[in-house]
Length: 242
Ligand code: ADP
Ligand code: MG
Figure 1 (spheres, rainbow, N blue to C red):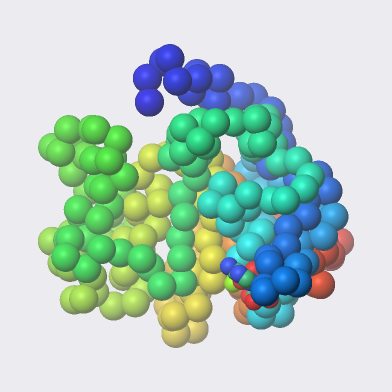
Figure 2 (figure 1 turned 120 degrees about the vertical axis):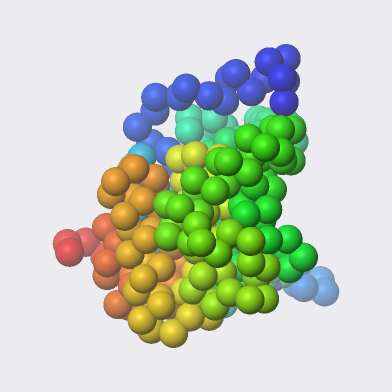
């Protein structure tokens, strides 16, 4: 992660397009048959966009999100993230891009049960070699931002679902990402808590310009975001208008 590893190339990119997918294809192999999941997918996402990815279960939403998040590679087509051709980037560069640019939020929160809320949030910084005291100070500021500062010492088991998701969002935000990718972030929450969590994500988008891509099958949630993009039989269909 030093200057020699090519990370300089990954930073300070002023491209308006944060995400550019061109003719992306992906299939999974089951026994000896190839199951197509994404076919000829084209997608442009500008900085500051907020997008809902909708579609039936099994339509490929998580696969697409994982491609966007550099957790999975497409078989064909090209992906430029922040102006960088992902296919040309080394594994180290991909990891650096992911760390610098992307925060993930999952349906199941994915917190470490033995760590306090504060330490869960601080973990990405600790991984990067930031001194524990500084990491904890920044983590505390993030917990404040999501309204959970007074729960910082609690472990996940003693937090409600909505509070756990706030911790996960604080953790996603800690590296000041340009992009938040959330896979059904409200899927385990009751309706009122789901609204609170969406409000938080939308505020981050509006106030801080964080680009937001949220997988949801709740039409009410999808309609609160700027763009609605449906994955259907491996292809994207974006509804125009409001
Ligand atoms: P969604 O998130 O829209 O429910 P997914 O992207 O998880 O859909 O899955 C799309 C399709 O790909 C589904 O048919 C699913 O069963 C299949 N699939 C997902 N992951 C794998 C995998 N690792 N191996 C094989 N098939 C997979
Ligand atoms: Mg899914």
